[in-house]
Length: 84
Image 1 (cartoon, rainbow, N blue to C red):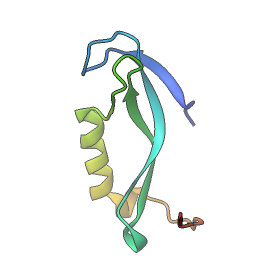
Image 2 (tube, rainbow, N blue to C red):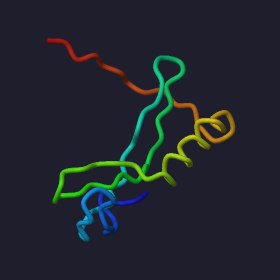
Image 3 (cartoon, rainbow, N blue to C red):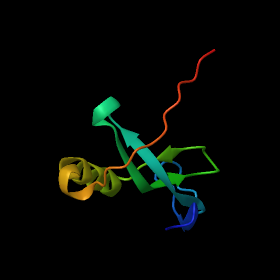
Image 4 (cartoon, helix red, strand yellow):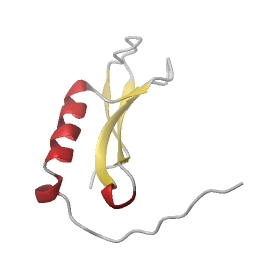
């Protein structure tokens, strides 16, 4: 398991040399088609407040989604709705 914050990189948006790569879960789809991908690298820049996924990360997410039947593990999760 990776730590929540790991690695320093250059921001692709503003060029700031101290952008951080965080690893966070991302969800795709809904209901029975819901897929949770853990440890997705997200670049966050404290200088321009940008938060983005690199093209390499997006390609890997597409690959995981395409191969979900062989790569994903089925588990039950609790789901709650936010209501006002």
